[in-house]
Image (tube, rainbow, N blue to C red; front, side, top):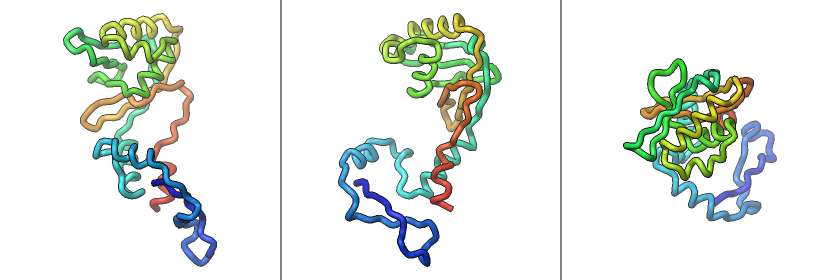
Length: 173
């Protein structure tokens, strides 16, 4: 259930604090169903817990700028679902998230929805062709390693990153 938060009227109360005003809220069942459909490690019961998780992920993240032509796509016929990227400066392959795969597809001018329907080797060939034939361009990657090495984002080289922990931090501290 989502409710509207309103700033407290009493300045003697916690400065800048918020209280729940249930008279202004509305019930949105979709919010709770989305929360329950998340994996256990993505359900946060407090802002402190959420902050700890996203801060930990940010602390383990690496951003690097690479030339698109130097990225290699790896896919195997033995595992038609698995596609990974080899990025200069990293020993192990990166598994793209759904989000970063879409960003990479957009960068090379390929429809992500179509590529997702293809077996990984065929999607990999198309993605590799796009990366090699793409004009010499730099891209910034955001990579995390928390048991599984993931490519979480692909952006332009001048993209400024705003980490998930930043908007939560003032509410926790």
